Image 1: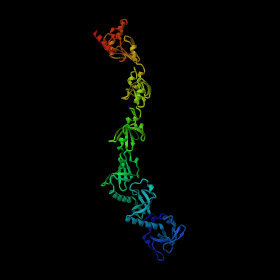
Image 2: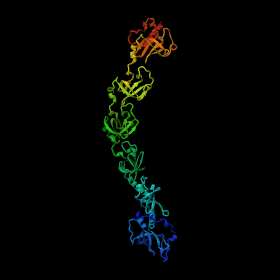
Image 3: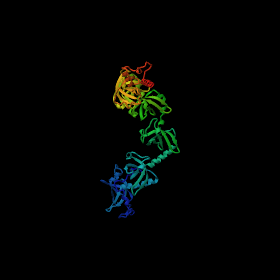
Image 4: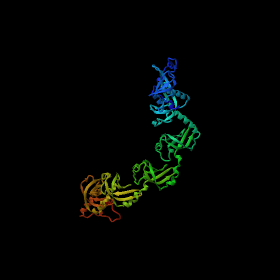
Length: 576
């Protein structure tokens, strides 16, 4: 039975006829003619009057039915005299005549058909009219309720797209008194699916290529309706390449071809694959990507240790962070490239068995260490900003990928610097002298003190042995007295050179800041030491300016150090 044949009466009161008692079902008119009030009779159109249709049902008087009741059934139908329609006899009017309804006659037929269809387990056609709470309203001749769970085999995302569509439905239950009908489309689909499943069980084979529609997307793969059975395509079988999430490639409802990888008839489990429709690209990798080749690629993933580059679908390689730039302290990979960037790389190593390719980016750029010796010869003066300060020195930025180190010992000839931060600040621009370049170990040594002459080289000339010097005491220890001769130059008066008399400690005899005169008895620029003697100065003065023989430079091979002189002086004193 079609929807048009069972069009409901929408303008009249559908419940009016339900209030009729059984006593009213059979009434007699004045001529003892039996009029079956509450039943459906066939009436003939005998006249048209404006918005009403005059109907004769065999009673002594004709009755009018509003034209709109016929328009609800078929808006385009022209009513003509002689047309016959089934009408419902509601009651006899007090003033005479009958109250008739075309719409209620249709409704009665609809309910009879609904009862018959449910009993026969048949289907009824209906048009989805609108959304209501909990489901959809469907016109099957009377309004019927279609719950959300009964619309389809799976949840429907766009319910509004169903409005106006016509489908066949099963009648789950109905209550004529309450005008309540519950229908289902899902039951029909399940029956169809069950039939298809039985058919597919005998036709599906592993290796078969079949088309299906995606019904669900999860983190681990796609569920695909094959037309009667569902199969799972795991995320690892979607592509030969990297797939972060299946939803990045597919959408629910999309149709695609898949290959049946495994079919378990006992459990009805089907494993599907998409990538298996193509050959494994790694089979050609050794030929296409030989070490040393320069190839284009796209950045598909960034990690702390490097970036993964897709060379083609299913083939990826890793550019380790150490291969991204020549710098020994490279930036984080995300500071150099971004996901989706098209870049060029060089193939470093291919391991086809484990499907690994090592790639490089820095190999496409000149190695700054190859030309550093040419650009910065030893002895050259350069200028740069301080990039970092440590306990052991200062790092200067030379150029991209190259930093130079000024060791704390090369900051000053004379100053005692405990920490470089006492003298320099990060970001400060300073000059330095190139001391050494170790290309193999990528080390660039610089010096600041070398910008000026070494004052100790002049000390040999400025403080000859036998000369008398004067300076302020800077420190007094048990083994001797330190005397500042000039900025950065100190001499030591060993305890044995203080007096002819044996002295255990000079601590109680001298104070820091006092001036002291002594004679130079040894100078070593290499050891940065000047040996002084109060005792020798006294003897020189006693001998009218003649330097005592034991303090005269000895004609011997090799340099004479302060330690040697002090040992010699101490030996002679002990002999005396």
